[in-house]
Each structure stands twice: as C-alpha cells, then as structure tokens.
Amino acid sequence: MRIDFSPTSWGRVVAVTVAGTAVCIAAAFFVDSFNFPYLSPEALWRAKLTDLLLPLVLAGSFLSILMWKMRQLAIAQKELTIVAATDSLTAVFNRGAFSMLVEAYLEQARSHSVVSSGALLIVDADHFKSVNDRLGHDCGDQALKLIAKTIQDQLRGADIVGRIGGEEFAVFLPGADPSHSWLVARRYGAVSARRIFPRAGNPVPSR
Image (cartoon, rainbow, N blue to C red; front, side, top):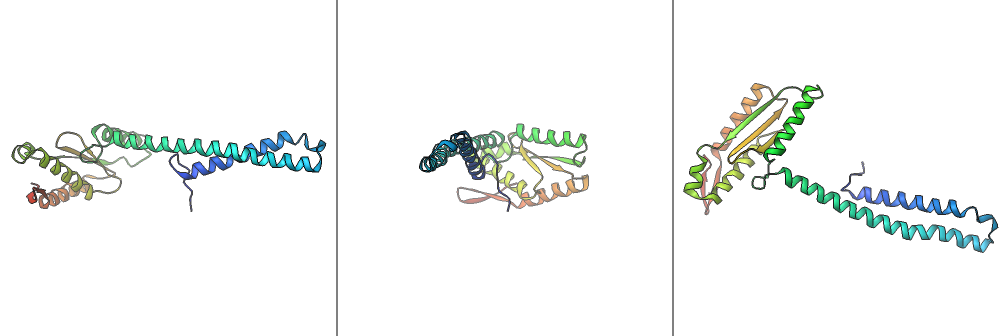
C-alpha cells in the first residue's frame, strides 16, 4: 500500500510531525548527554525523562498544528486552482485552462516525449440564440450543461474538454488519428440528437 505524502494528505502531516519530534528529542539528548556522566542515577533519570517529554510535548504540538495549517492552505490552494480553471456553468475547463493544457501537450509532442498525433474538435450549438429567445436563459444554461455532459460521456480519460465561447466547446483528443476523431464526432452527433433537457417539467429536444 502506497502512503500519500502530497501536501493535501494526512500522511505528510503525520510523517513531518513524527520525524520533526524525533529530531528534537535526539537533539535534546545529544546536548544534555555531556552532563550525564556528572549526574547521580536519580538526576540522570529525571534528565532523560525531561529530554524525552519536553520535546515530545512542545515540538509535537507545534509541528502537528503547523502541518495541519499547511495542509488546510494546500487544500484551499488546490480548490482555488480548480475553480480558476473550470467554467462555472458547465464544470468543464474554461478557455484559458483548455488552451494551456493543449499547448503543454503540443510542447511535449514537439520534444517527442508523447505521441505527436492528436485531434481538435469544435462543437458549436446551432441556433442557440433562438433557444435563449424562445425558452429563456435559464433553459439555455441547462442546455449548455447537457451539451457539456454529453461530450464528457463520449470521451476517454485522457481527452480534454473546454468551453471556449458562449455556446462553443472544444475537445482535444491526444494521440487520435483522423479516423478516430471522425468516429468520435459522429458518435457525439448521434447521441446529442437523442438527448432532451427539461423545461418546466416538460422534455425539450436538445436539437
């Protein structure tokens, strides 16, 4: 079983607290060891007990609180990063994050560290303005969510989906050849044609 030592894990909190406390105890024993030969047995026992308990309480408490706070900050930073990269309506990548991920893949492809092939699909909802005009913007938002969900359901784990405009989505297929990308586009078109979204409790065709 692999232990998680990432900044957001409890494994790092425990590991740093235990290791740091052990170092402090070892340092206390080392510094005090120069006085051990001159102490009586009873005083030596008290000195060793102090060298053990004092760092254990002080360093253990301090390091555990410090690492707990650092874990909270790491979690908050991770959540902020996700929010900054995600389209708030459809929960897919926003334009900036999508472009950055595609550029990163292309850079790796140029260095031959990944497969150089890939495909970019642009999904544009036809006549979407009429949906907003006839059914209202709330219904239009539901339609955009459905489109994003439909795209995600048809793709592989490595594929990247982003919303690049009002009703425009982009899909990057790493390693895909033209025939595969054509099949993905056809499959999305076939599935989206059968999708419906609710409006005031009544199903409305998505196309």
